[in-house]
Amino acid sequence: MQKKALFLDRDGIINVDHGYVYKIEDFEFTEGIFELLELFIEANYQLFIVTNQSGIGRGYYSQSDFKTLTSWMLLEFEKRNIKIESVQHCYHAPEENCVCRKPATGMVDKILIENSIDLENSWLIGDKQSDIDLAHNSNISHTIAIGERAIENMEFSFKTIEEAQRYLEENKVIIHS
Image (cartoon, rainbow, N blue to C red; front, side, top):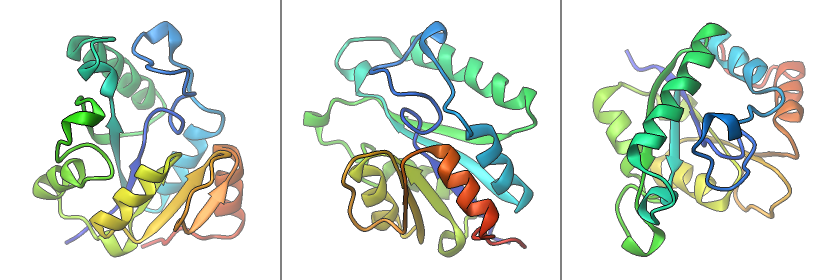
């Protein structure tokens, strides 16, 4: 049976984007992220993170730095009974034109190999055009853009994660099964 999924960008969605965040002491969860994820969990969604991490390819930090921070982040989620199924990341610099860097579909493709996902009833939340384009390129039906940037072709747009969470909860937008 296919499951519904929520695909999340990391920087700007899960954490405040301070630019190339790779140290635990620099990682700050966005206001409302735990409540937002709890809404999706209550509706039986699996959670996945898909994140471009070009700071690795640019030499700003290492794969090991990324893995250390990711392990810590996942433990913080687990403390709140939030299970992230997997974290996919692209470590390439943009000029490398790899198949995993958003908006290319490589990270989602890998998730689909390992999981049976109902893309028609799945969501992607991001803060950049490349996130929303990834959703369209991967046939993820529902999209939410967060922040002040002008982003095209999204289904919903909110300034903050808290705004998105309140709207989705109050308007019962998320599909329950």
